[in-house]
Amino acid sequence: MSGIYIHIPFCKKACHYCNFHFSTSLQLKTELLETILKEITLQKDYLQGAAIQTVYLGGGTPSLLTAGELEQIFVAIHKYHSVSADAEITLEANPDDLTKEKLEELRQTPINRLSIGIQSFSEEDLQFMNRAHNASEALQCLNDSRAAGFSQLTIDLIYGTPTLTDQQWASNLSILSDFDLPHLSCYCLTVEPNTALDKFVKTGKVRPVDEQKASRQFEYLMAWANNNNYEHYEISNFAKPGQYARHNSAYWRGIPYLGLGPAAHSFDGKNRQWNIANNPRYIQLIQTGKEKWFEKEILTEKDRYNEYVMTRLRTHWGCTLDEIRPEFHDHFLDSITPLIADDLVYNRKAAYGLTQKGKLFADQIAMELFLI
Image 1: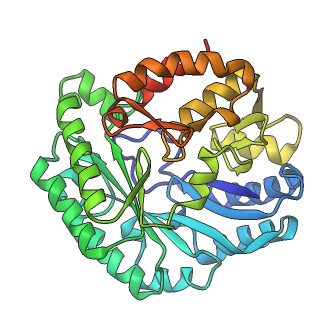
Image 2: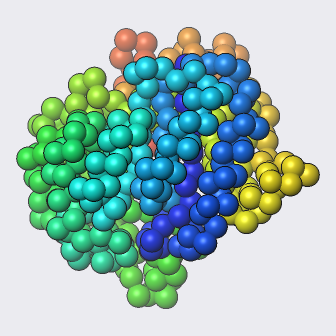
């Protein structure tokens, strides 16, 4: 079982908080699509014939592609890979792209799941983030997506923004209660280096993230999720029973995947590689064939242990000793014992995971367990 990720690096606008690789110019869209199709051919053996269980188109804003352009990608994937009949095929989309006409076109493609970047139902929040859609479009796209036949929907929300009051956060989640979506992802606002938001904070135009407010809104989110029958199966992800995101779950469980497109990452179980994050250079390197378009890292056993701890501790599956090399057991147990005593980590049925309190400090806890 394996997955394929395809990075579509184009957006209508630059969101102030975003540090993903993208361009607001569509000038190279045709050439880049042709290059992704060529990369599919060049990387056809990367997954060694494993059946494809998930395909995920992210970005960027892949909903900017036409149905015809998407179809070209799927034809190329099916040419070189065996895609399971029940594969989860996800398209990231912005609300303003999901018109009724666009949704009808998407229904004619293999896409069976939409991941919609709503971020907030508040106009003030959306303007602060410099999103391309408005609050009305955020609501309309959910109704239209369901009417078009997309039952597998997930949305992104962001909390902790300076413009988001506790009352508005409660209102955002109350709206979700009415839609009863199968899945949602909620992220705390992070000030990433070299973003517009980073500049605004450094120059005093925007206040730094209020950590206390962010923690309070995260705790409210966890309580709301529990009351609305959502399983908190990863720090930022919530699902109705049996409705986990299969693609991202595979990442967290260390299953190999192939990444295509500029800035995309791949993992074969032992090594990681990542494509160059430059659209013209990516096109040039692949089309000329003179140089590699990616860098590669051979993971040491220590690297793999640290990655395992970082990812699995964030999930409800947690860490288990039988998935950790025996020579690391003593370090793991010595490091995690005081965390259990402080009620930050639980030990349940031979699995170690984060308690409700521990979820507020996930990254710090993982670092306590790392091998340096």
